[in-house]
Image 1: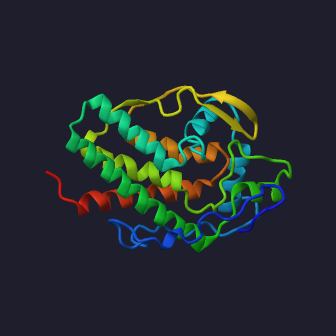
Image 2: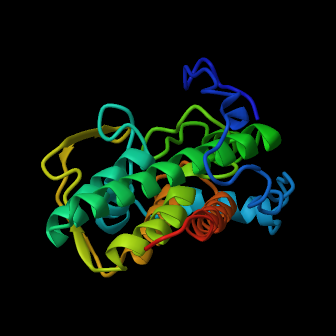
Amino acid sequence: WYWDGTTLNQKPTEPMWGTLRTFIVDNTQVCESSPPYAYSTTPGSNFYKDAKEVFDMPRDNANKSIAYHWDDTPGRTCSAACHWISITEQLLKTKGARLDECAKAYCLVGFAASDVYAHCWYMKYKYNLLRPVTYIREQFDRQWKSLIYTPASPDYISASAAMGGAAPVVLARVTGNPSFTDRTHLGSALYTPDGGPYVLPERSFASLTLAGEEQAMSRIAGGVHFRKACEAGLQSGRCIGERIVNALTFE
């Protein structure tokens, strides 16, 4: 993985974040997924197919709605973790939760966010895998841009996908797995490489689990992650979430 300093004007974000002390999952390798696919420019290879999927992703209203809802760049929610804090608040208000339930929910999501990000950043700088934009510009189209802005960190694994795996697991211990409407970005204006502003609506989900799965796959629609990074992130996030709830005692 390397930086395109001229086009993307990026510097690597937090390369040592994976060394932070965690709260519950004390070893970042406990929930480690398999390695990414081997880099390849051969048509038909797994790596090539993952890149071609991102390149060929239709930029229709359905995919834009998914990508934009889970964009979570600085200045909006600040990260995928902040988005789940917002969802937690909305669920607790809807439920009319007691103070002790609120404290438990925020604590669990905070543990999940901290441990997930430490794990993901450990993985990112272990493998240093290039992002889709670099590969696509080299192999398919030198002018291609991702639908949302490509973050300044390696591809593997996706932190958004990992939060989409962990947060529903820990939240279910307090709120169950309900249907809900996420109003985190309702009315906010989003600017993207394709233009803007786009004023975002609310978005409804049949369950927390399905919301997390959509969040994971949104990074493919947004053009910022390969599928392998999203699937591995979702798997690792669920592993971390399960270890958190299993390590704690609930009344």
